[in-house]
Amino acid sequence: TTPRLKPLNAVGIFYSTTTGNTETIAGYIQEATGLDEIYDIGSVEASTFTGFDGMICGAPTWHTGADEQRSGTSWDDVLYGWMQEADLSGKTIAIFGVGDQGSYAENFCDAAGELYDVLTERGAKVIGFTSTDGYDHDDSKAIRDGMFCGLMCDEDNQYDLSAERASTWISKLKADGMPF
Ligand SMILES: Cc1cc2nc3c(=O)[nH]c(=O)nc-3n(C[C@H](O)[C@H](O)[C@H](O)COP(=O)(O)O)c2cc1C
Image 1 (spheres, rainbow, N blue to C red):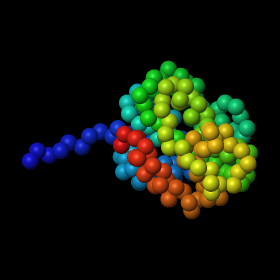
Image 2 (image 1 turned 30 degrees about the vertical axis):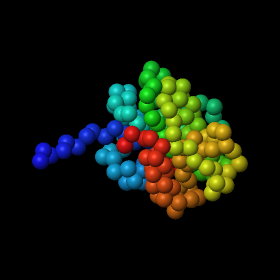
Image 3 (image 1 turned 90 degrees about the horizontal axis):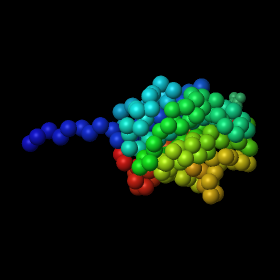
């Protein structure tokens, strides 16, 4: 029998972080998917990003209440830099946010909503919406039609739930057509 060549990953995981929490969640997602690598969005070229058919994109929120550049990480430069030229039509994207619903209850994971807005504007289809049940926040710019626009994690208050939330979410992405 001819050995089967391992196909290149069709899905890439991209994140940014300031204190490591979003990298932790990216690691849970990597574990649940078995993908080879996680990419710091600040260290990749546009062609690396757009070379995938599916992207899983994660950001923390640091700029509380900001309209634009809510993350406070390299996503801010990317979203208003090379991403503005990127053609994401035909791409399937899933978003994860990391925030603190206790201390920032009015702005929980706001940056995830900004990723949603910019990436859909570029033509991407975003999948992987989740219920807001099980969270205790007052408001979030990551809510669309009553649901979170992706997976939201809270390493400050609910770190013990994150690994399972990530693996449940990945199963849902598989069912919903992420091209793993
Ligand atoms: C000054 C400051 C502002 C923050 N603003 C928000 C916020 O607006 N919304 C939110 O959900 N979390 C906010 N956070 C919490 C961080 O997003 C959270 O700790 C996150 O896990 C950090 O991720 P990172 O370690 O990947 O950078 C803030 C934290 C600090 C210290």
